[in-house]
Image (cartoon, rainbow, N blue to C red; front, side, top):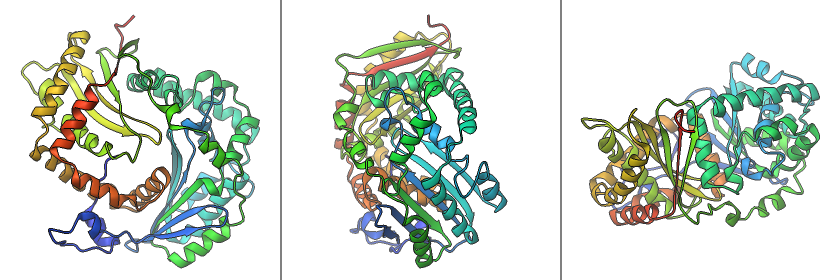
Length: 451
């Protein structure tokens, strides 16, 4: 997880020193003004008052995603995300979008391996109304039978668009299923086609009652709101909703070792697809979110694949006879495991096997030639600058706080993140680089010339 901070937002929302002393760390100079509320039923709410504009962003981070599913109901988290917009007891069938858009707001959601997130952006005058809507669907989701069957067809079409008809989606899922074979992370978040076709309303309702409960969610509210009144409203709307008796056990049953890649040897997996040129991903297992070793790998991924001056771009694209049309690198850390990957699309006529051998040979060389004090400082600076736009919004700050509270257990973890990034050295990155590229790996490709 890369950490980036907007200096403009600090001036607006944080109680910190704008011109900190040299000996003072950035983490010590920043103090987020967050009101944390804990309800008796286990719900956590984080509230930040930002009076700059008369609007707010409201996020709900439910701790349920692809990793919580089992064969037979794969894709349940994503399918349920769709159904959450179809109506509940008080706010009936297909009224949610109409009410929110009619109030001048917007709403959406997304599902990942580890969580499902719902969010709204609205004028400050509509806070009570949207809290009422969210409490209603948390406790009383209808799961109408007709809507359920219609949405099944929508999900199947979405899967076809994102995977079967998308070389990039096909490539990513091929990488995940190959690297994490036999683990929940190896299954597509959107679900396997037979499961999407066969899952029943009863199965979905049981899944909903287990995971959609106040003791499995973090509410984050950022904007022009009265903190005290907002706290009272949250208590009124959500305080009486019963907690789930089984969700803690469900999370405890998921052991980290069940999610780790099991590579006895390196793999090469080729799949026929629609791409006219070879598209590839080379991936290596790393560490789960919050692991200290991940910070150096975050920096390494940017040195190798971020921007025109990055190593991969210079080596394979900005040359007289380019080998690739695109190249990138990233380090992804999930709740239970992590992976480092390099990907791209090759120029027509480049031999895939020769490229793979050349890339893997050169990676170790990059550990020595590309990791320098200057390149590391540049990446650290970029992290800060990038968040000017990313967090200088109510929605950006809400997402930032919710991710840390839900995935790392405490929104205050940002301070430790800042210290860890500040401490990353050349030796740290070189060591992480050599260690990672010495591991067993998975190389996958999608191309219309594959058999």
